[in-house]
Length: 165
Image 1 (cartoon, rainbow, N blue to C red):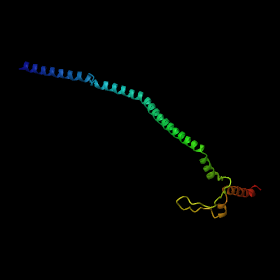
Image 2 (image 1 turned 120 degrees about the vertical axis):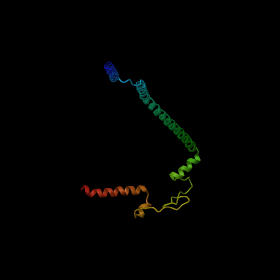
Image 3 (image 1 turned 90 degrees about the vertical axis):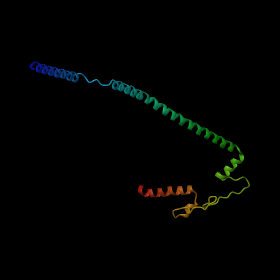
Image 4 (image 1 turned 135 degrees about the horizontal axis):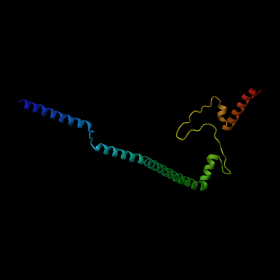
């Protein structure tokens, strides 16, 4: 019995030492991680590098496309303006249009006609004339604008003259 007991104790001790050795080896051995994480990190790094490498050219491409669109709009507006100016030029080639414009804007009259200038506010077509604000000076409202301008210059000069003395 003594030998059995010793052998059982010796066997338990040996089993305990083996278990302890296995635990020690497992603890001292580096933990083996999944290799996918390293690959995933490399893949993420490559993708980030691609995004960074392509970001500037893509931004330039989009900016150039918007510039092209703006230039096309400007060219279309210029074509429309040229067409409008051609139409206006053609109108000015018509002597009747020139005569009408001279009568309207320059108050020209043909020989033998009598020209009239109506003083006072005129009613716009289809409506009533809005009251004009003259600041209490009706005489100034009836005079031409250039007379009012010279009068204001004279008044300003007269007010500044005592200050110069």
